Length: 257
Image (cartoon, rainbow, N blue to C red; front, side, top):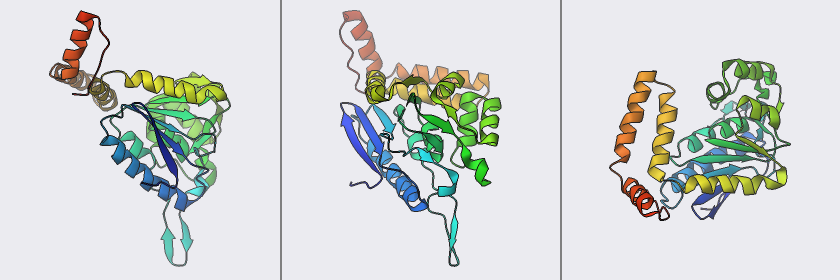
């Protein structure tokens, strides 16, 4: 499929989704939502893909302030294109996802970043939710994912003030996993994605499920889920491969079965 708002490349078992140019209108936002959904569906069916990188390539694609997504009136019809979720298609992926952030991640762009499992940013990047300055609030998971990631106190502060933070502060509060020089971002993100992708695919999927679902459970329920998923892994061929590779001291070759 020929995409207008993004492009896809592959490097071994890694798929790289690069957002193209600034997403500065409701119609572009709507198109990006549709194409991310289509792209996510395609990647989910590709057994060769073990990890996905989502990046902005320094084109300002993660900078999506609230005034560009606010519905507007044209005649008697309310135009709501652009308010569709960008985060949901990425959050729905079973494989691990890495956000590689070159420019600023603001508003719904930051919400898209929050839907990824791991976040790496250039040292010049900034982050925030300016929505409140336009009389709005985050609407694509920002109030929920952000608080779960950095804690309620910091989330409330940033969302209510609308102020931006730099990459080092984002790293300090746990929003980012790593900060690197701009020129190293692509290489570092690919290195991490390849390292993650070398692990057993089923185990990675179960680990994600245990962590994300467990956060909405009691501790007892979460522990039970973890134990159930752990036992299920013992029925997979990848688990057998892991044991054999350890015993024979040979390279691991996981197949996702």
